[in-house]
Length: 161
Image 1 (spheres, rainbow, N blue to C red):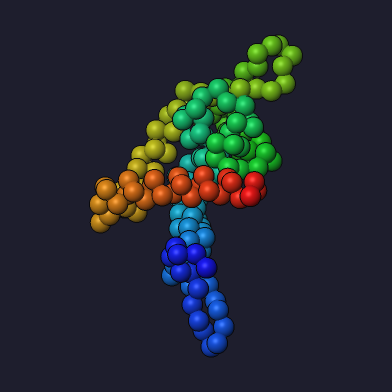
Image 2: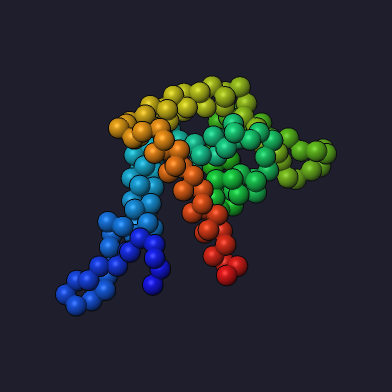
Protein backbone atom coordinates (compact mmCIF):
# COMPACT_ATOMS: atom_id res chain seq x y z
CA UNK A 1 0.00 0.00 0.00
CA UNK A 2 1.24 3.47 -0.86
CA UNK A 3 2.07 6.10 1.74
CA UNK A 4 -0.02 8.55 -0.32
CA UNK A 5 -3.55 9.62 0.56
CA UNK A 6 -5.54 6.51 1.52
CA UNK A 7 -8.47 6.04 -0.87
CA UNK A 8 -9.90 2.92 0.82
CA UNK A 9 -12.61 2.77 3.49
CA UNK A 10 -13.95 -0.23 5.31
CA UNK A 11 -17.67 -0.77 5.02
CA UNK A 12 -19.44 -3.81 6.50
CA UNK A 13 -16.24 -5.85 6.48
CA UNK A 14 -15.26 -4.92 2.90
CA UNK A 15 -12.76 -2.55 1.39
CA UNK A 16 -14.44 0.11 -0.76
CA UNK A 17 -13.28 3.26 -2.51
CA UNK A 18 -13.52 6.39 -0.38
CA UNK A 19 -15.29 8.75 -2.76
CA UNK A 20 -14.36 11.71 -0.55
CA UNK A 21 -10.68 11.05 -1.35
CA UNK A 22 -10.56 9.08 -4.62
CA UNK A 23 -9.05 11.52 -7.13
CA UNK A 24 -10.51 9.94 -10.25
CA UNK A 25 -14.02 10.24 -8.79
CA UNK A 26 -13.51 13.82 -7.60
CA UNK A 27 -12.01 14.94 -10.92
CA UNK A 28 -14.83 13.19 -12.81
CA UNK A 29 -17.46 14.94 -10.67
CA UNK A 30 -15.86 18.33 -11.32
CA UNK A 31 -15.45 17.66 -15.06
CA UNK A 32 -18.98 16.28 -15.47
CA UNK A 33 -20.62 19.13 -13.59
CA UNK A 34 -18.62 21.82 -15.37
CA UNK A 35 -19.20 20.21 -18.77
CA UNK A 36 -22.92 19.87 -18.17
CA UNK A 37 -23.28 23.45 -16.95
CA UNK A 38 -21.05 24.96 -19.64
CA UNK A 39 -22.63 22.92 -22.44
CA UNK A 40 -26.10 24.16 -21.49
CA UNK A 41 -24.76 27.69 -21.29
CA UNK A 42 -23.05 27.46 -24.70
CA UNK A 43 -26.11 25.95 -26.36
CA UNK A 44 -28.41 28.64 -25.03
CA UNK A 45 -26.05 31.57 -25.68
CA UNK A 46 -24.21 30.50 -28.84
CA UNK A 47 -26.17 27.60 -30.33
CA UNK A 48 -23.06 25.42 -30.09
CA UNK A 49 -22.08 22.61 -27.72
CA UNK A 50 -19.07 22.26 -25.49
CA UNK A 51 -17.03 20.29 -28.06
CA UNK A 52 -17.48 23.01 -30.70
CA UNK A 53 -16.53 25.67 -28.18
CA UNK A 54 -13.46 23.72 -27.05
CA UNK A 55 -12.36 23.42 -30.69
CA UNK A 56 -12.98 27.13 -31.22
CA UNK A 57 -10.95 27.98 -28.10
CA UNK A 58 -8.11 25.67 -29.15
CA UNK A 59 -7.85 27.43 -32.52
CA UNK A 60 -7.72 30.79 -30.74
CA UNK A 61 -5.00 29.45 -28.44
CA UNK A 62 -3.01 27.89 -31.28
CA UNK A 63 -4.04 29.01 -34.81
CA UNK A 64 -3.20 27.15 -38.02
CA UNK A 65 -3.78 23.70 -36.59
CA UNK A 66 -4.59 20.50 -38.42
CA UNK A 67 -7.55 18.54 -37.06
CA UNK A 68 -5.18 15.98 -35.51
CA UNK A 69 -3.40 18.75 -33.62
CA UNK A 70 -6.71 20.00 -32.25
CA UNK A 71 -7.47 16.45 -31.07
CA UNK A 72 -4.16 16.24 -29.27
CA UNK A 73 -4.44 19.66 -27.65
CA UNK A 74 -7.92 19.18 -26.19
CA UNK A 75 -7.96 15.37 -25.87
CA UNK A 76 -10.91 14.51 -28.11
CA UNK A 77 -11.27 11.84 -30.76
CA UNK A 78 -10.94 12.58 -34.47
CA UNK A 79 -14.61 12.01 -35.25
CA UNK A 80 -15.75 14.52 -32.60
CA UNK A 81 -13.20 17.06 -33.81
CA UNK A 82 -14.23 16.55 -37.42
CA UNK A 83 -17.92 17.05 -36.64
CA UNK A 84 -17.19 20.14 -34.54
CA UNK A 85 -14.93 21.66 -37.18
CA UNK A 86 -17.48 20.98 -39.92
CA UNK A 87 -20.18 22.72 -37.87
CA UNK A 88 -17.92 25.70 -37.07
CA UNK A 89 -16.86 25.91 -40.72
CA UNK A 90 -20.47 25.79 -41.93
CA UNK A 91 -21.17 28.84 -39.78
CA UNK A 92 -18.17 30.70 -41.27
CA UNK A 93 -16.35 30.71 -37.94
CA UNK A 94 -13.21 29.08 -39.38
CA UNK A 95 -10.77 29.56 -42.21
CA UNK A 96 -9.27 26.38 -43.66
CA UNK A 97 -6.14 26.60 -45.79
CA UNK A 98 -3.94 24.00 -47.46
CA UNK A 99 -0.28 24.31 -48.37
CA UNK A 100 -0.98 23.36 -51.99
CA UNK A 101 -4.07 23.76 -54.20
CA UNK A 102 -4.69 19.99 -54.08
CA UNK A 103 -3.74 19.59 -50.43
CA UNK A 104 -6.19 17.61 -48.35
CA UNK A 105 -5.11 18.38 -44.82
CA UNK A 106 -6.28 21.84 -44.00
CA UNK A 107 -4.83 24.05 -41.34
CA UNK A 108 -7.58 25.82 -39.47
CA UNK A 109 -7.79 29.26 -37.88
CA UNK A 110 -10.60 31.49 -36.68
CA UNK A 111 -12.29 33.86 -39.11
CA UNK A 112 -13.20 37.37 -37.99
CA UNK A 113 -16.64 36.00 -37.12
CA UNK A 114 -14.93 33.20 -35.16
CA UNK A 115 -12.83 35.71 -33.22
CA UNK A 116 -15.96 37.72 -32.37
CA UNK A 117 -17.66 34.58 -31.05
CA UNK A 118 -14.50 33.65 -29.16
CA UNK A 119 -14.56 37.00 -27.35
CA UNK A 120 -18.16 36.42 -26.24
CA UNK A 121 -17.20 32.86 -25.22
CA UNK A 122 -14.22 34.18 -23.26
CA UNK A 123 -16.43 36.59 -21.33
CA UNK A 124 -18.70 33.69 -20.32
CA UNK A 125 -15.73 31.49 -19.36
CA UNK A 126 -14.10 34.21 -17.26
CA UNK A 127 -17.35 34.86 -15.39
CA UNK A 128 -17.84 31.13 -14.70
CA UNK A 129 -14.19 30.74 -13.68
CA UNK A 130 -14.50 33.54 -11.13
CA UNK A 131 -17.60 31.92 -9.66
CA UNK A 132 -15.99 28.46 -9.52
CA UNK A 133 -12.79 29.64 -7.80
CA UNK A 134 -14.35 32.11 -5.36
CA UNK A 135 -13.05 31.79 -1.81
CA UNK A 136 -9.95 29.92 -3.01
CA UNK A 137 -6.65 31.74 -2.52
CA UNK A 138 -4.47 32.37 -5.56
CA UNK A 139 -1.62 30.40 -3.97
CA UNK A 140 -3.96 27.40 -3.54
CA UNK A 141 -5.01 27.64 -7.18
CA UNK A 142 -1.41 27.88 -8.40
CA UNK A 143 -0.49 24.79 -6.37
CA UNK A 144 -3.61 22.94 -7.55
CA UNK A 145 -2.90 23.70 -11.21
CA UNK A 146 0.67 22.47 -10.71
CA UNK A 147 -0.68 19.28 -9.15
CA UNK A 148 -3.10 18.78 -12.06
CA UNK A 149 -0.20 19.06 -14.52
CA UNK A 150 1.73 16.44 -12.54
CA UNK A 151 -1.31 14.15 -12.64
CA UNK A 152 -1.62 14.63 -16.41
CA UNK A 153 2.06 13.74 -16.84
CA UNK A 154 1.64 10.66 -14.63
CA UNK A 155 -1.41 9.54 -16.61
CA UNK A 156 0.54 9.83 -19.85
CA UNK A 157 3.04 7.29 -18.48
CA UNK A 158 0.42 4.66 -17.53
CA UNK A 159 0.74 2.84 -20.86
CA UNK A 160 4.52 2.75 -20.65
CA UNK A 161 4.80 1.09 -17.25
